[in-house]
Image 1 (cartoon, rainbow, N blue to C red):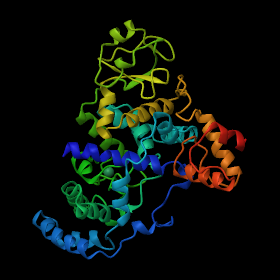
Image 2 (cartoon, helix red, strand yellow):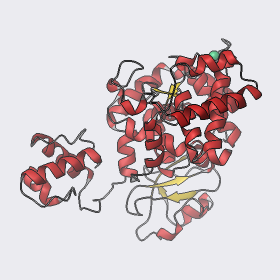
Image 3 (spheres, rainbow, N blue to C red):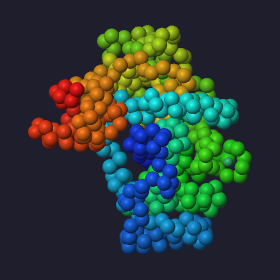
Image 4 (tube, rainbow, N blue to C red):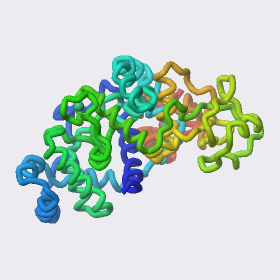
Length: 415
Ligand SMILES: [Ca+2]
């Protein structure tokens, strides 16, 4: 089940990535935002008979009729979650794009205020668990934009739809049962059970299985509450997840490093661990100077090549990946943690992309397209569906060949 959970959490990152470009001001609130009809219950007789049979299995596992009635009220088949489940790996983001999405400057600014407001709570949790407060704050930021984007999709509908659909049916049925147990124990009311398309809930986006295995009532109010405005139970729950995974108290996740000229790319990769002394001997240095920290064996990650930003990562980096197995996720959490605790942006520079454009070029292209009347979305330098559609629209209007591909020529025309 752990493997399922880890595979599953990739979906959470995909959601965070596609959902967090608008900033906290655009956070969807339950009942306030226009709801995509694909996320409203649709008639589906096969799903309904599956639910009827499931309810018998749930009763056999100790779920009461009262719980089933309350939890399934207003719930139903959601075609949208099946689309999301099938398309979650559509875009494999580069690290540069990923960081632009999960840790842009305006989010760092917003996050530093949120971190300051929660500092006492985070310090309390950290004192008991040994997980650094900025790491917990960073996961909070990446998962739910510091509690402002916890998701609005009903969890009972989402998990039952995916359990019925069957691709990972047993996994989602298990999560559906754990969601019902949340209602039955009174940890949350049925209408609080909203989250991502895949049933991840609350400040740090836990699926019901992970909730039942790790949830903590840290403030002692009798509820293991990861949903309400007070995130302290969510911080403690995430810290418990990390300590159980093997988090080493007081140790760093990693740091940005400078690689010597001609560094062999074959030495990079998370499986190629060496001692800090060995990396030091090969000429690896902290990007901001000083000596490398001595925190056990470490690997070099340079996901965009050895002349782009590079990182030395320790054991605790692997623990962050237990939350979500994507290396970009781990680097995103580490980078945002560093920025939340006052650190500066990366020293290393990402070079031009495959189209020969830097991030600044891509931002200029997006602004130019929007000026020309084709909405390219937030000028974040990330070329997504909206930017591609804007390029195509512009190319069509201008009588150019319609490729949807960013280019230097296009940028020059739009300047
Ligand atoms: Ca509590």
